[in-house]
Length: 220
Ligand code: SF4
Image 1 (cartoon, rainbow, N blue to C red):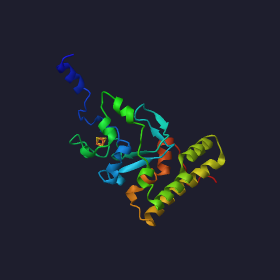
Image 2 (cartoon, helix red, strand yellow):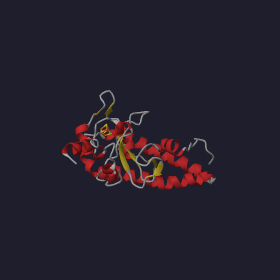
Image 3 (cartoon, rainbow, N blue to C red):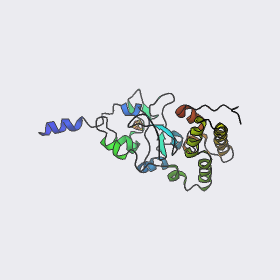
Image 4 (cartoon, rainbow, N blue to C red):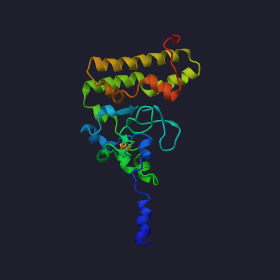
């Protein structure tokens, strides 16, 4: 193979900055991206957490899966899948020099690098908030009440006709709502950080990803 062929073959795998992957959703963060958060290259309010055990779309293989690890992601543009940092009019990344490791690894025609890092060394809330004692205690209490191990069991029971499961799910939703409100009102947490600190609101996740609607007046 001469140099010209070699160059041509290589260039077809290089990122052409077409924006296709940016339109499919924001990346998950990994340990190597912690600096981007601590130095506020990516503001905490622009991130959200998918909690362990939560039902999510599998970006690599498609379909819905239950994630076994926590995932911290960059938000998407409202009512769109596109990463919030993608500038559609310019077809460009708004934080290109500080883009996360998944974006650096992503190549449209060769997914080897992204598949290689996709599920590994993911950044988690403990990395970000483990040293903030009061906040970490609230996060742990919230997980104990509203963790997806418990939530998934209640959903199965509800589908199986267990009468009390709807009531318990309703209680978990109320708890989730109350913790968010109190952490903002009493502890002064920035409201925009709630989805990073506690994950997306439980009621919304149950509706959007589980197809479960809990009515406020579900029978006790
Ligand atoms: S951070 Fe930048 S490169 Fe990564 S998905 Fe968002 S817009 Fe694209």
